[in-house]
Length: 434
Ligand code: UDX
Image 1 (cartoon, helix red, strand yellow):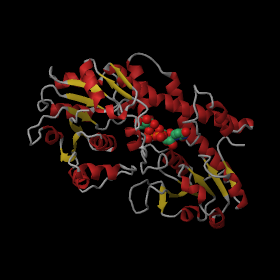
Image 2: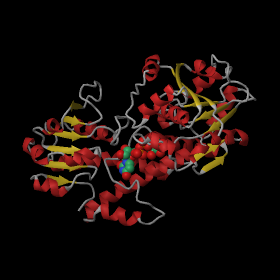
Image 3: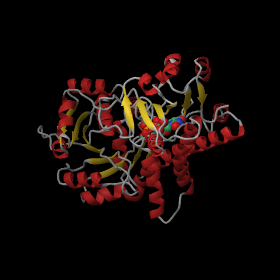
């Protein structure tokens, strides 16, 4: 494998993981960000996102001289040693904009900034999730015949991003110029992953297609769980029975308070918008989004029932605020969605999350964040598990029951062992469980 000279523009979650992992594969990587304070911290080896293995990788590769951090895209591309950058990764945010469509202003701004700086023959790689056609649009913006734009979507899950990067299920690279796609695919050759080489539009589509499929799978499971509740079936047994079918698989079948995070909500909305722009509806995906919103309301119904039918003035304890376990990310967290609905009905909330210390301000106005599960449980009319942090399983449930006003736990993740709670004198309500 050739060690390539790579610039990564945007040192957020995706950019930093990409840069550090590419450096660990032997490439020379410069990561840039417009946030000078963040770059200063990264130079000191301080990583401000919770991602196992990433801080170690950042330090190791800086020490080995394969990874540098600079302020601004210009600095990353115009290298002082005069060696031309061969590949530029765009890893800037593409948040949900007006009406659910992806907001591409950051991609456009970087393209405008770097267009005159790119060395001839360089490849620009779009890693951000962008609508089909963005590679073409970026190429037009760059207006350079001697530069190719490649789509190479990331499939990194938060909390396991380093592992996912280094052990990918697949690599997808798309470009209308095949040689540029092959050059990008070669960056990953050490990983030995199945590689799909295709055109830019298809590569861009893969990311939406995969994330929307996952969201549909989860909404389907959540809808099944609701039916199980009504019909007296057990969703755990149902999904296990389904999952042994190899065409379905066991993963991504756990019901919960709905799916969230920085990707699935944004990407489902974006695909619906992309379809609308092409004059089509996408009812499967739209229904999955609607089912997901309803799921939060269904969880509130369960909590209201558990406290006797009225939430006004009731103290509710929350276990978990992040959108899933193993992260400190609160973006589009279903836990916070449920919290907002509870507050709208007059409940008073205290919440504990291992990823969100109480001292960090501005988590949410809806919840008083505390540093102990016991403090969340104190005087609560119900305690609600909203994120599947494994440590919640081994809490001292007798002690927790002892400080609650009403010994009831609503477990929206089916995380806890109902027998342990029963022995602690706590009544347990799950989702779709017998
Ligand atoms: C997702 C995709 O998995 C990843 O490939 C893509 O690159 C980015 O989006 P991430 O946002 O980190 O990754 O979260 P993921 O682990 O996929 O979970 C998404 C949501 O679904 C979370 O709210 C999670 O709690 C929920 N979920 C997941 C369930 O409710 N049940 C499950 O069985 C799995």
